[in-house]
Image 1: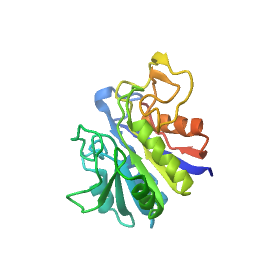
Image 2: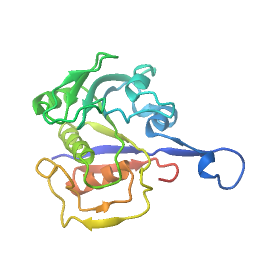
Image 3: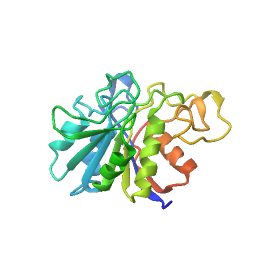
Image 4: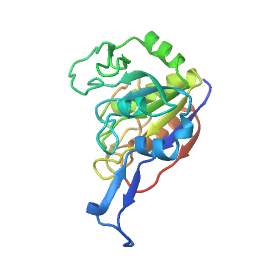
Length: 229
């Protein structure tokens, strides 16, 4: 399998005032989608875009990524992909079918029950895949497996991937719990397939890079991290 390029857009922590160190209350986090559109918009200019996300994919004002991208000049969002629980995060069943976003009319390809053939066809129609998911900071969650499956398909289709990062909700510092002996295949070991601690102490973007390295389909990564976790 050929390698592909993975770009990791870190979230930014902006501090108000002129003090050397801001208190937590004075710090404002800019999610990866904001950093992409303000600092790295050239990466998507004129490109056909696909977005793997759900209800957690929002900017600092709480606006959905899909809505922000649809109103961004020179950004051509054409297809959506959804993980477990669906694009709106309201489903609690297996075998989720493909659907359509009621606001934009864009097709949503379900990665938790949809057709792999349809997913690959959708990937073939885009230039860049954006991934924006909020993980929970623990290995036993399916989003990293879903993201890895998509990165692997993107590698096979020679597509660029941009991961829009977010803070680790449990701090991103402490590492705790058991460690899986070796990496599994996300297709057969969908839950907890990575050889990392149960509480892995990384952001979702960092975990994506680690997963791609274990899968040996990452050619290069560009970390644009601007702050803490």
